[in-house]
Image (cartoon, rainbow, N blue to C red; front, side):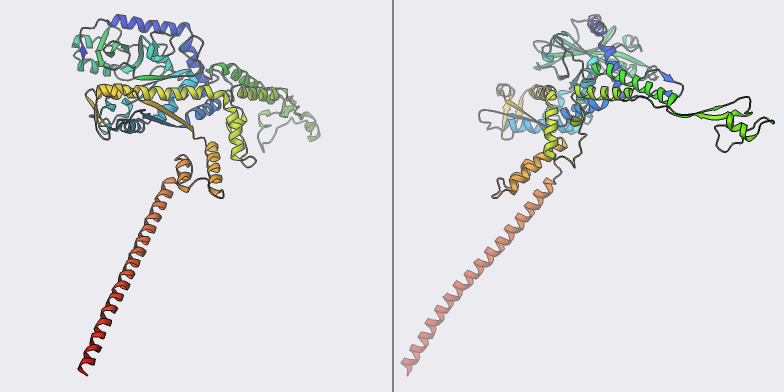
Length: 559
């Protein structure tokens, strides 16, 4: 439904957007985010160099973030819808199949990894599903070949909330998403939406805002036509979610209402949420002061070693005529005519190296170690354990203990997956407005709304050591006397994330079972033939005995 006569003007939309920008500047969110991304990427001596070039640094931030990202996102994620009552139409089976297909089509595992990394560094991230037609049974996924339109990961700095103190994204009065688009692309969209050409001509390139976080030096890429800041505005109405796109003085994509959709098609993930705020501060921000101290100590150690840890050549400049050759291998050294070799040896020598105190090294190592430990990413957590000296179960136990501080983040990750499931179910209802076809029948849209399914989210670890411990446990159960599980149960519980070729084993077992059943059928068939032949032989033998008896009787009568 197109709403050409908008009650909200472009000026009002832009004022709300600028209010969000001002709030981000006041709270330092944009500056902090840029600093966090620079330190995470390794740009820790920005525009500072010594005479030899770039200064040395130990990047302890990236390993900590990568570890936590893996421990959170490296989990098998399964969404299952079910009903308490009977599901004769097989609706939930069809929903589960569609959700599974959407997850694989949208590469949601990669989306989750990107989302977790963005939140760990910047504090929060949002997954936006811009095109709900993917969930329509009339629109086949294969027809929508642009996966980028299925899901987008948005930096939290690009998302402006109507209420910055409301932690639930679905309770926001409105949401604004900042987009930096090619100017010509915006003009093309405006023309497709019937905007007059004189208004299209007023869409001009502009400067990027403070919310556009970049770690690269220099200006924006020079392209023909330039870039323009556009905003996507979403708000909930009684009829559904309505949205539009606008630049500073023009709504170039008019308001459109998605009838019946009462959920914003987006979910958020926040790390270390601030008290009373919708935003988080991530893992990087509070590690930066220690990272700076570590880098400064490293530079000071480097300079001290240069000054004292190497022998230094000294010479009498009044005797040596070409001092520049003293450091060149095999070079001839010129001396004054009145000097002999003995005197020369007395005028050239070395200052011996002096030992450098280990206090700076100890301080630096202690700072690195404590910083990692306080971040919950010490050597044990990072997996710096010799597997030859510890069993898989022992390594897993140590890592599980170290993962206790991560339980909050893992729980928030599972909640994000559940939020995705809820949004997807509402998109399925919205984009199948007449009926929904189940496995065994069809239900109406109203019946689909009244089902109220239960959502089960399974987030299980696929960390290698955890998988190894699980496989070892299953081996023990299978090898028990008598076995506590069957081989089929072992294959089912091992999971696809193990290094066991489950599918090949199943195929081999199925082939062997088919051969066994075929051989058994052949044996049974042979046995049946033998029995039949035996019965036939006995019957024929009985018939021959009667004939012989008849012959003998005839002979006797004839005699």
